[in-house]
Length: 208
Length: 157
Image 1 (tube, rainbow over the protein chains, first blue to last red):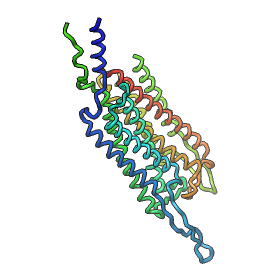
Image 2: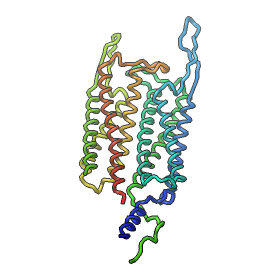
Image 3: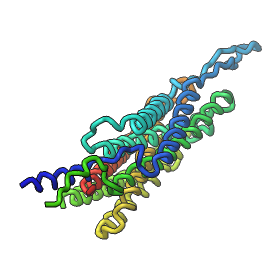
Image 4: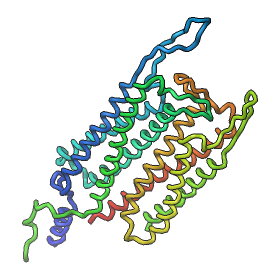
């Protein structure tokens, strides 16, 4: 019977995803992604350029001080390397998702687009939060030291290094908060059913 | 319901994992005598390990609460959102503790920080076990959020 076929076609139209750029709330998500992209990208760049060289007195022989040039770089600490890499990945993810939502409506994702975006957002936020946590506690160790383990603080000698690192951490925290909001919005988009079907083939229903 | 069984099992495993992590870290203690000075190692000496214990505790309590709440399907969507937040919390806590543990084991030559694991080996081993349990809990929560997203996708009309 032909009506079975028509019923299937109407059902397939109802299941077809609405173009993302027409959904309600699309400008909000795009603005959040843009700000998160700038926050994570600036955290990456500021930490990657974090370097300070200083001539310090390390010993005194007789009455002449022995000076050595010590340098503090971000590569010395694995936590900061992880921070730079994870924030770079988070900003790249935001850029790709912005491009996908704006220009990628013609790609046929077989209805998987929303779920893939939600899963990728969730993974990015978990990665970025790990990087942020590790970097914050390493910075706290550098700033306050740890008397029980006999680890001295280094921020009194390398002030510019510490200040720049702190700025990168603040930017990364802002980006992390925004990423969490974006993930929540992406998951909530999965909850709402399609607002209206796409009126492509509205001449299929024939009245017998 | 296959999916809700799997999410219940994952929550139970995560609860056990976080409880084990907190218990081992609270119990870990070692002390040694170096040049007449007693060198003591506990989790409370380091803010990162304190944050680890508190965050795993919050994760464990949340696992228990959500195990009970998942009986009422009306609050299911709120539970999914809180799962993401708790996954973030667990991941950041285990990352922070791992960063400090790495400094404790290998030292940081550029900053002049010496490794301490040679002096307090028992504390280091116990902390390693606790961190492994915490890492497992964070992984389980990530799989749990994937399960939640999958079950939401099946709901789409």
